[in-house]
Amino acid sequence: MATFVVAHGAWQAGWAWKKMRPRLRDRGHELITPTYTGLGERAHLATPEVDLETHIADVLGVLQCEDLRDVILMGHSYGGMVATGVADRVPERLAQLVYLDAFVPRSGQALVDLTPQAPGGPATPKVEAWRVPPNPTPPDTSEADLAWIMPRRVPQPRRTFEQAIKLTGASDRIETTYIYCTRPRPGDVFRQFAERARRESGWRCLEIDATHNPHITAPDALADLLDGVASRA
Image (cartoon, rainbow, N blue to C red; front, side):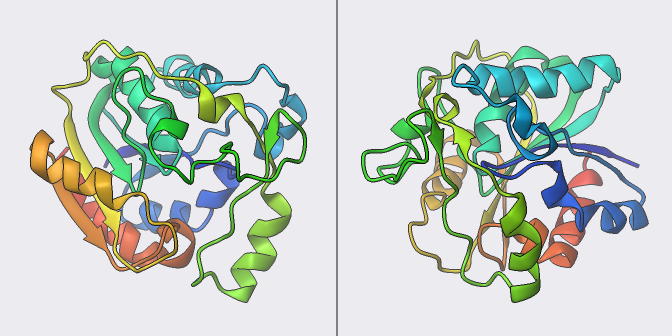
């Protein structure tokens, strides 16, 4: 049995991984889905001061307070920024690191440095100066899923996208997998990270026939893929 801890994507929260819980449980695994400050059921805690370090601290707090060890930490989308920071701080608690169609920053980079279409850029409409509204959902999202997720997605504090990450390199020896979603979608900024993983890092690189949110649109295929990842732990 493996324990997966998810660093979720922007505008989402732990609720977005609802479909994955029974599927991974049926395969013998545990799934823990912390919600970042200012999102989901913690939306009431949003302030202009919430930044990337806040979200890294959120996940670190769960690992430490629950005394979780030998976990598979998985960062999805924006959560790749968070997972990278967590892995750098507590590599001794991780068995593996998984990026699911996620940003993979180098030290000194913010999310806005990694794509010209990044949230918080000059073309992004503003709800308030300090919050960024959700991006559109992937085109293959069903009507039923849209009815579920749209009321739960909330604007995200802008500083989470603008704060640069500072890394020590402590996580460099963690076994790492990059999972790339292969279905065409507008503004695919994640292929660059899959290609970099193959070219530079020596990581294991996998693909899934899905757009950007396979935990919502392709949960069975993702569960099978993660079950295979867990077998390497």
